[in-house]
Each structure stands twice: as C-alpha cells, then as structure tokens.
Length: 614
Image (cartoon, rainbow, N blue to C red; front, side, top):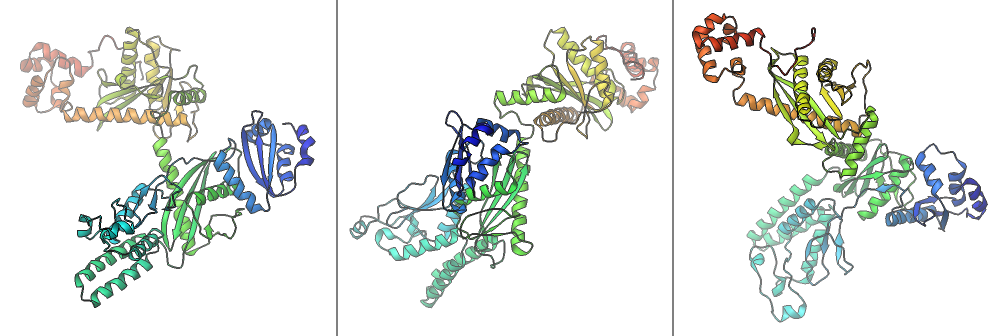
C-alpha cells in the first residue's frame, strides 16, 4: 500500500482506542498493533520515513487493514497480546518458547490424587502451575508425599464402594504414606485439609502448614501418642528446612512478579521471577525476536503480558527496571531504588545475563546441530567477510606445539561443509628442523601436506588457516610457492590472542564482528586444532618418545640410543663426539647417521631447505 493509497482511506479509520491488523495480498496476517487512537497510530506508518529496513518492508507488503474498536487502552493491550499469541504474525515480536510446561494436577475424583502432567484437560480437575522445571515438580511431589499422606492408587473410592468394603489397605498405608481412605479410615474432610496444605506449599506459603503440624503434634502429645508426635516433629523439621532453603527475601514482601530485559540486536532476553510469600516459586528466561526495532518498553510490556498469562500470575505488583506503558488493570508497576525489591531485580538481571552467556556457550562455533542449508549460510558469510573467491567448503588449519621448548610437533585439522572431517586430520613429527623454530616447522608441515595432495591428485582446500602471526604465515606461503600452488587456495594467519586475521602482504589485519557466525566458526576450528595437537603431544610424552633425541634419528633404534646414553651419559656429550669416537661405540654406519643428524647435513629429498633468513 502506497502513501497515496492510504490517504484515500485515512478518513475511514476510527479515532477510538483499539487494535489494527495488517494483511498482505494473500490475506496473511502480517502485524497486530494497539493504539490509543487508531487513525493517528496507523497514519504514522505512511507519513514517516523509516530508517529500519524491516519497517519499510512491512509497509510495502500491506494490502488491506482491519480494525477492532475497544472501550479502553487496557482492553486494547489485552486483545493485542491475545491475537499475537494466537496468530504469531511475522512482523510482531516473537516469543521463542514452544515448550510444554508441567503442571501438578489435583484430579477431580473422590479423594483426589496428585500427580505430574503436561496435558491440561477440561475435566474439572485443578491444575497448579505451570512449572518451568520438571525436576522441580518431581521434587515438590516427593516433598509433599513425604509430609502429607495421600493416596497414590487408582481405585474408584466412591462412598458406595467404601461402604461395601470393596478395597483393602495396601503397603502404602502400613508405611505411613496413606491414611487408608479406601477402608474408610480417613474422612473426606481430613483429606481435603491435606489438599489445602499442599496448595499452600506450592504457593510458597509454608507458615499455615507449619502451624497445622504444630497443632497436630501438640494434640498427639496431649493424648500421650508420643510416637505419632515424634513423626510429626520430624515433618516439621523437614518443612522448616525447606522453608529456610526457599525464602530469598524478608516476609515484608508477599506476592510480586519481577522482570528484567537484555537486548542484543534483534534478540531480546527477559527473565521472570514469580515471588509468593517471600519465596521464589518460579524462575524463567525467555528469548524474543524483534522485527521492527521495537523500543525496550514495548518488548518488555509484550513479554510481561505473555509470561504472566502463561504462568497464571495474579500478582498485583510488578517490579521492572524502567518506566513502561503496561495497561493491565489493578496492577502496580514498581521501579525499585533499593531494599529487598532492588535485590530481587538485581537477581533477575543476573539470571538474564547468565542465560545469554549460556546460550552463546552452547551455540558458539557449533555447526554440527545445524542442517545443510544453515551450515552453507555460515560458509557463504565467511566467504563474504574475508572476500574469498570461493565459498570455503573445505578448510584446513595448522598449529605447532612443543614440550617445554623441545621436540616440536604439528597438527592439522580439516573441516568440510562447516563440520570436522576427522578422517582427514593429520599429526606431524617434525623431521628437518633443529631446535625450536616455529617458522621452519610451519614451512615443513605445510609443504609435506600439500606435496602429498599434489602427488595423489587430491582436491585442495579453499581456505588454509595458519594459527600464528605473520611469520608463520610467511613461512607457509613459501612452501605453497615452491609447490607452484599460488592461487589454488587462500592462506590466512590467525593471531593467537587478538583473533585478528592476516592476509599475506597486508599491513592491516581483518577483525570479524565478535558475535558473527564467521568468527565463531574460525574459533571452533582453532580450538579443534589446539585440542588435536595437545592430545598428540600428550600421547607422545606418555609413550616416552621424548626421552631422548637419539631416537628421533632415522636408522637409530631404541637399543642403540640406550647404549649411547649408558656409555656417554647425555645427548649433549654425544653431540660433541667425533665420528671416529662414535664408530668405536656403535659402528661406522650408525656413527655417520648420528653425526649427519647433529651437523644438519642430512636432508630429506622431498622437502626444500629453508630460504636464507627464514
């Protein structure tokens, strides 16, 4: 709908409060909004120049508009949230929460049973909850059954069946977990008292329950039923311990809801604490996706309405971090400056920050759980971010490692389609480098890897990551040039600390956005090559192959190495011996191998020597 087309219908839009619905040409609901004045609010979409691409896209798709007039802003607020929850229009805030939460049901039947369920049936039963954690529900049910005797059987305990003595008490009765209503040993009134204590426990209101048990204990002691009184005393201790564990604030606070908000681009996170009788009885964090650059106030108002509805909250006070337009009737909004309410808000903020960090930890660098299209999208994003000529479907990464400055080894990991291809991982024992020289080591292993692929006519990666700075990258590039593979693949260096990416010859590094999927994939690859290399190092050390350098010499076995060390005491002393002196100990041929190794005159024919100054 164009601005001109809207002007033709603007005068038909009512000025009353209400909700408006935008539809596209296919009659798909795009957006639901509320307004104090429908005409003024809807007109703003067609007379403003929006900086947001998404808002512009919404306006371009509007084909026709429908309105519903209501009596007040409060009614508009409630209707808007109801419609959004029902239809989930594409351009409205999306509460990413499709879980089925557990309830505790008090079944509508004689001597009602209590159990966990995820299905709410309109059968007249009482459903308490929902609860955010099934573990929490099971803990509550176990706590209840340990303290309040209730039946767990499925018998049809009608008055007629009990009077006809159709049932016998079971083991639960003899264990003290049930009072035997099946044989008429417990009245319906006494059973209802137990159910009321359960309702109080589930609402965090333990004081009436504790008072009830104290009176029962006193009555048992007065009747000289000391064993029964001792059982009740233990239950009291259990309840008081549970209360001490549950209370998080003073008794000055009764029933309040606490909400906090954290924004991260198009994503928003809202934490909800439900407090009843000074006890947190529910805690939940939701993720929301915004579409039209909605302000914080609008996002939080939407989340509050949705979450209070989901968890059936009737609290008359809501604690929030800032002013917002929330129109639920008879509800007070509080922005605390200090005291217990401020502590609750800070606790909520800690939870929402933890939730976001936990999400990042779970998602970071993990493409294995994504489908092929999602993985390809990340790879195309990496291609764009690094300006690669081809999408990096095949990526390899090299890293050097050494043990206390000695005995260097290297590792290479391979990722294909964004996930590890472990059959292509390689370990390298360094052959040509004397001492610790990261540059020379990198040149050797890169040469060996791609000489092998070249000889076997295998495909080359589109992207090669060298875990190190410009020096290691330059050394790796020398090997690529000596193999004549320039232009076959893109080499980049990854600085170890700053996560900067270097291209050969560039003075400035490339820094990818911290939360970008491209950088997450690179981190994942870097962490994997570190893990693979360190594992190799530990295996080598555990096998004792770093025991002495002599065993690294081709043609010198363990027995010869042990013989030399036994006679000359150290590798350092052996390095100083002449070939003639070594010949007397191990023979002329082995002596020549040892001298050639220590003087550096031996060189594998398939690996080029390092360029001067490398």
